[in-house]
Image 1 (cartoon, rainbow, N blue to C red):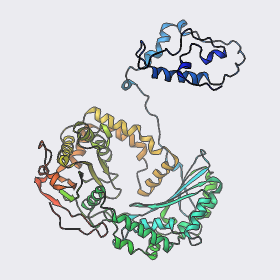
Image 2: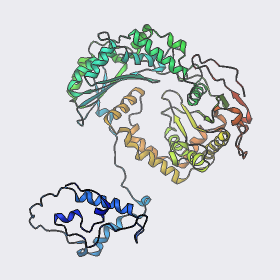
Image 3: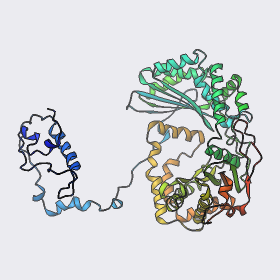
Image 4: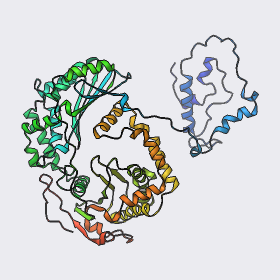
Length: 564
C-alpha cells in the first residue's frame, strides 16, 4: 500500500504500522512543534520530518509471511549471563584513537615472471595470465623502440607511424571498413609509441578472439597507410603544434628538456610544421619495418583462455611473419646541464617554475634510498616537506612536488615544480631550495623515514593488482634487463635504509649549486619578489639570469630577441 506523506500523518499517534498488528505507541512518534520551534533535545521540525519519512519507508515495506518456528537449539548465554571478563574483552580490544589501531604485517609475495613466461618455437617470448572473471581476452604486443628511433630531421615519426598503423587501414581493408569490422566484433585495437617502446593492444570477446586476432595481426603486419588518413593526421598534428605556446606548462616542459638533455637528443626533440609535412608513406613504411616484427616483440595475454590453446593459436598466427633484428638501445645524451637561473617570457599572472639537476640510472645502488628521500622531500603528498612548507604553512602554491625519473641506460633527472603568483615566485623558490639544503645538512626524523617506508612497502602489491598490469611489469623488466630478484628483495632493501643513508644520497645527488632554475612568466613582476622582501630573484646565482626566447610554435625558432 502506498502512504501519502504529510506532517499530520507523521505526527499521528496511530502510525501505519498499527494496521499490521504492531502495538502503537502511546505518544506520537513525531512531536508536534510550531514552525521554527525546537524540542527539549534542540531538534527542529525538519529533522523530525526526515526521521518520520524514514520510519514510513520502513513500515511501508511488504511484510513477509513469518517462517515456521525453528526447533530449539542450544544458544550461548546472554551477555548479562556471561562472565564479566568475557563481556569486556571486545571492548578492551578497541583502540580509543584511530592511530592506535594495530594491523598485522602485510603478508604478500610478488609473482615470479618465470611462472608466466613461455617461448614459441620461433623464439617469440609470450607471457600468459589466464583469468575467468569475464569472457574477455586482452592481448598486447610490446615492440622495442619509439621516439628513440626517430631520425634527427623527423622527430615524432615513430609516434605518427604507430598512429597510422591503427588508422590507415590494411592491405586488404580500407580504413573505414577496418573500423566498421572492429566495431561489429566489439573489439578494441590501439597502437601507440612513447620514448622507448611501441605498444599494440587488442581487447576482444572470447567468442570472437580468433577473428579479432587475425584482423589485428593483419593490421600490424601489412598496414595500408592510406594517403587520405595520413593527410588528415598530419593536418591535425600541425593544428596541435600551433597551440603549444598557449599553455605555459608546455613551454616549461619543452625548455626544461632542452636544458637537461641538450637540443640534439631525442628526449628534447619536438616536431615542427615542416618536419610533419615531410612525412610520407615511404617514411612510415621504413619506420614500420624497423619496429613491427616478431624479432622485436614480446607478447602478453590475459583473460579467459586455456594456456596451451593460446600458445598454439599464437604460434599459427605468427607463422610467416619475418623476424628482424632487435631495435637498438636509446642513445645517451652527450649534453650536460649548466647550472643557473633561466627565464622564458610569458604574460601570465602566475609564474611556473621547475628546478633540478641530472639524476641517476634506474639500477643505481642509490636508487632506493633516493626514492625514499624524495618521498620525504616532495613526492609524499601532504606529508612531504615541500607541500607542508610551500602550501600548508605559507599558502604560496596550490600544488608543489618533486620527482625523480631515472632512465635505464643513462641518468634521468630530479626536478621540483610549482606555480605561484608572480610576486611570490622568488619566495616559493627560496623555500624549496632551503628544504633541499636541509635534507643535506640534517638527518630526517625517525617518523619521516618510517612514514616513507610504510608508504612504499604497504602500496607495493599495487604493482601487480591486475593481470594486465602484472604482465606489463614482466614485459618491461625483460626488455630492460631488470635484475630478476628486484621485486623479491625490494621491500627488504627499503626497510634497511637508514637516516644516514638518506643524508648521504642527498649530499651526493642533490646539490643546489649544480641545479638549474627555469621560470616561465612575467619577469618584471617576478624578479622584484614579495612585498615583505623575504626573497627576490637576485637571491639565486647572484641575480644573473639568462633570458631564453619564446619559440615560434610551428618552427621552434625564436620569436624575437629575449628581453628582461
